[in-house]
Structures are given as structure tokens and as C-alpha cells.
Amino acid sequence: MGEKELRIQKDMRVFICFFFAQSAVGHAALSIYFFTQQLTVLAIINIFDVLFFIIVLIINKSLKIRVLSYLFAAKIVQFSLISTILMGLNINVQWLLLMAMFMVALHLDFSKRQRIIIFITLPVLMNIQLIIPEFFPPPFYIERNLFLSFFYANIVVVSFGVGALVRYALSDKTTASFEKNIAEFKQIANIDPLTKINNRRYAEAFFDKLDGESCFIGLMDIDNFKVVNDTYGHDIGDVVLVNVAEELKKATRQTDLVCRWGGEEFLVGFPECDYEDGLRILETIRKGVEDKKIDTEKGAIKVTLTMGASIFSGGNIKDTIEACDELLYAGKKAGKNRIMSIDHPAKA
Image 1 (cartoon, rainbow, N blue to C red):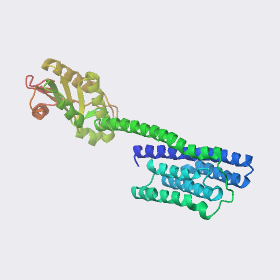
Image 2 (image 1 turned 90 degrees about the vertical axis):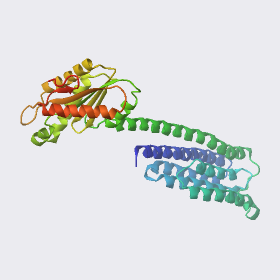
Image 3 (image 1 turned 135 degrees about the horizontal axis):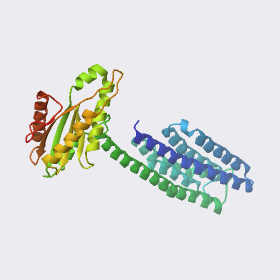
């Protein structure tokens, strides 16, 4: 399960636990009221309900979200029906069934089919509840009671209101988190995980945004990199790649393109930069890499770069990069550790 799904599950659990906590407080208030009215049986029933909600709150993390959803909806239905059987309809307890429907309407962990079944079942139960007193006279029949009538009716209203606010807050939090994750994923998708500089995907997007702007392009390759890997191991090879990336970052501006083009190849792009300035920056990079010592168990080593450079001034960027690639390999044949460009055939 991904980070987003885990966050949604966590928020859903908080939302359901809010209703369990609210129910525990409500039943505690009812038990106190029934004791004051000397309706001990009803008070004890509500005390057991309080204990039920508290136990579920304590063990909620060990229960699945769906189980919590079932427990709450089932408990509302059970309490509403039993209260009607014991006390009659004068106290508006039948409206508690709306809370069960509310839980389903707010998309708790029920499937679409289950929601449809519940939406059909609950109104049927409400109608059955309305005729129960006609056939089974309630043993604790209560005449019209202002406190209980207001209590049950308003607990539904409060549940709708507060529950909707809680749900909205959690959804807003989840949306914000989701948007943050998207931004992070986009960044990760454009970053080379080893060197922490941009990758080829980012470079292609960078060139698409040039919009006719000229750009100095430098393509470079680490000389004898396969020998480094074979002699000193891939871990040292990774160190070499990271060191080259660091030299590239030191010599360039934040607005410049610095990317790992693939394998041991790197590519830089300097918008609105002429040949002389571009070559000067490449020489700084070449010299910085050449002077850098890398310690290994077999002694310190140095690596060098061969580069091909050209100016992109419109048209197809691939043509410019291919021209750089041809110049780079001409530099390899000419002895490596040098910068090759059309106007400057060899520089080392």
C-alpha cells in the first residue's frame, strides 16, 4: 500500500473513531439522565454501551477500517431498535438510523453494492421501527419527554454537522498531502538517484522550453570509465560519477542545465551563452575533474573528461546533441581529456 493510501486509511480511522467517542459521551449522558429518573435498567444498558464504545476505541488499531464501519452502523441500528422496543417512539430515537445512513453516505469502507443494500435496508428498518409499539407495548414507555426528544433529534443534527466538518478537514488534508506527493514524485522523476542532478527526462523538458532561445550545449564522457569499474569496483565507479556531478554543479548557474545523460555521459546547457564563455565553463569543469583525486584501497586515482560542444540556435535539438556526440568521439580518437567544438577543433 502506497503512502497516499496509508494516509487515507489513517484519516478514515480518525473519522470513525470520532463517532465512537461522540457516542460514548452521548450514552454516558443518557445513563446519568436515566439514573436521575430512577430508570435503572435503561441506565445500565447505556453504561454497557459506553463500555462498548470505549473498548472499540482502545482496540481500534487492531481492527480493520471495514470492521469498525460495520460495528458502528450495526450498533446504531441495534440501539435504535432496542430503545424503541423498550421506550416507544415519543423520544425520537428512531432518527438515530439516519446516523447509520450518514456513515454510509460519507463513503466509509463499504463497497458500492454494500452502500446500495444499506440505503435500502435502513429505511425499511425505520418503517418497521415505527410500527413496533403497535404490536409490542414498550415496558418502559415514556410519555413525550422534552429532554430525550431534543437529545436524540439534535444528536443526529450534531453528527451530520460536526461529522461533515471532520470529514471535510480530513479530505482537505488528504488532498493537500496528495498534491505535495505529486510535486515530490515529479521532482524524483527528474532527478538521477545516484548523482542527485537532473536526468535525461528533465533535459528534454528543458530544451522544449527554450522557445527559440540559443543555448550552448556540452556533452561529456568520462574517459576509461569501464577500466575504473573493472579495476576498482562499481562502488568507486559510483564515487567517480558523483564527483563529476559535483564539479558540474560548482561550475554552473542554477538556471543552467546539468544532467546525467546516461551511463558515464553528462550533458550541460547554458542558455544565451556564446562560444567563448561556454568553452571557458567547460574548461573549468574539465580541469576540476582532472585535478580531483579519488582515494581507493589500491591508491588514489584521477579521471578525465572528453567533451563535444556546439550551439543550439533553433531547429531540432537532437541534431545539435548528435553533433556534440560526434565531436566527443573525435576527441576520444584524438587522445581524450579535451574539449572539441566546431570552432575550436581541439582543446586540452
